[in-house]
Amino acid sequence: MYNVAQVTEEKCVAKKGCRLCIMYCPEANCLDLNSEKMIAEVVINRCKGCELCKVVCDAAKHEAIAMVAVSSDGSLMEKAGEAAALGQAYQG
Ligand code: SF4
Ligand code: SF4
Image (cartoon, rainbow, N blue to C red; front, side, top):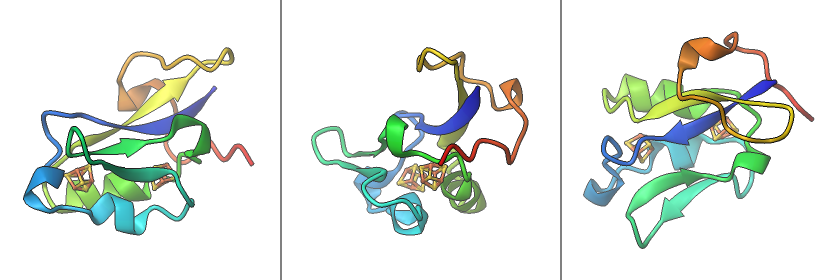
């Protein structure tokens, strides 16, 4: 089990021009703007769970990103940052 970032649509203020998480994500083609919905969107199978996006989003007081556990079959588990330990999750 490991963690990936997930954006909460209702909290994301990308439509107001925020791109913080997108700028800070160190992984190529992992976190990008969904220009239809105008929210930031994480490509689950590219996310390394580093939490940088969550840190910058929280620092800006948007708190739109949660770390979500992924089970061994690749499905997302319940949204709960507490579900898996912080800082683990480097899956290559
Ligand atoms: S930093 Fe937060 S509010 Fe800003 S685009 Fe990313 S998820 Fe949305
Ligand atoms: S947790 Fe790290 S790799 Fe995953 S989307 Fe956020 S910044 Fe990118």
